[in-house]
Length: 300
Image 1 (cartoon, rainbow, N blue to C red):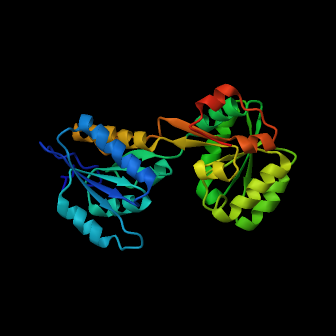
Image 2 (cartoon, rainbow, N blue to C red):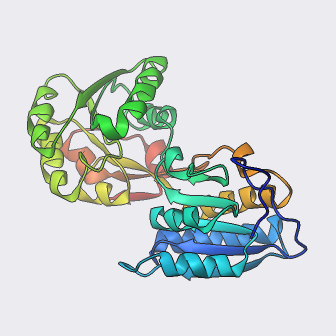
Image 3 (cartoon, one colour):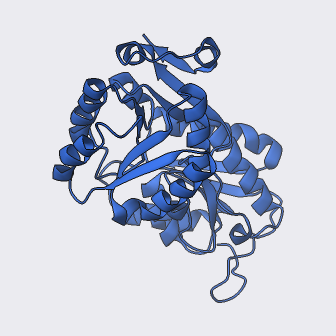
């Protein structure tokens, strides 16, 4: 177990000729495997002598046994990929933790021993790509639940003003509010921006939101590839392998003596995007050839 540096302080990394890394994967899905692969690849540079043990969490299984297993491995550092893995790592003790595959920086910061890479792109990045892909769309609407996203909306408002955009934020308290809130935007918004929100954007709300987009010719900017395939005009996407490499770079800093608390969580440094050209044609949007050439994937 890593040795703590004092009550309430982040643990100092334990000197070790051969660092031992325990990896916790919340699920055995492709993005997680890609992040793990990127981590292992970069670790050859960041800590070439490191030994890595990988645990894939079983769906529905109690994490208590895994907590005890990780404690017994006496790891120098834990890589926790996904929310369930982060929760297990939180219970392990004072071992430094690099977290990844979680949505926001607040999902990373579970204690002074945590740092990592979160998935949410800063709103400044979102709006920069909006202006590139859909130039001229100035009135940006968004539905949000205040309990989850008020802080994000406040920051997005500032970023929108700095970019010369107008943010039309509509607060939603329950899924039943969504139709009325969408209708209030029908004649006011140029684009509907999808913000990660487990109340607003769900499999159940996808159909009414996408229908609203098509019927009112207001392009919907989705969260990820599945939303684009379902009918969103585009979405920003992550390079999960590079997120793993970012995690390994943070691990290397910890192995070199940095305290996790001194390493602020960071967003993905690579931005990819997908475009649904079929939806763009239905909405009579013109997507430039340059933008199309830069897309990771185009849905025809």
